[in-house]
Image 1 (cartoon, rainbow, N blue to C red):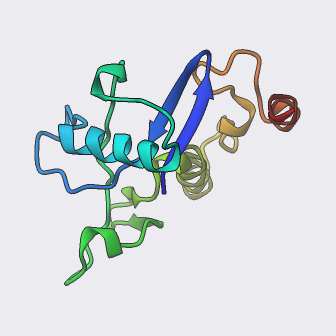
Image 2 (cartoon, helix red, strand yellow):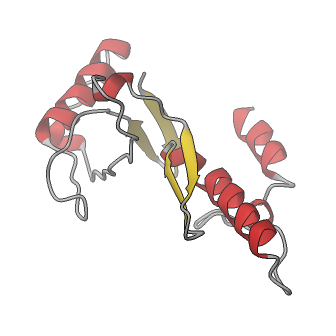
Length: 150
């Protein structure tokens, strides 16, 4: 599956799901990733003339998949999981990049409930705007999308 998301005169295209064994601190989209996406664009839009020279920037991330014995990375579940160690340390892993806020909410709420912090409340991420989401929040997002779709 490939996404093409227009925004501010540009189009964000993605994603790829390839094995990465480089430095997880500074992952990069390699030539093969870019070529794959350019090929997908050319297939979907055959009249569009696009090449690597048209690519202004790339970015990449490393997905924290939970190891499953005998499975290829493309077969591994993208579901997040939470573990609580005997020491009380809670760990969350797996999941999808797009679900990071929901994952954060889940782990924060569990920690607050378990430790009964005096001044802590449930996670507030749903009420906070995303970085770069000028004026958008959970209350007006659906209206924003409807207006953009017209």
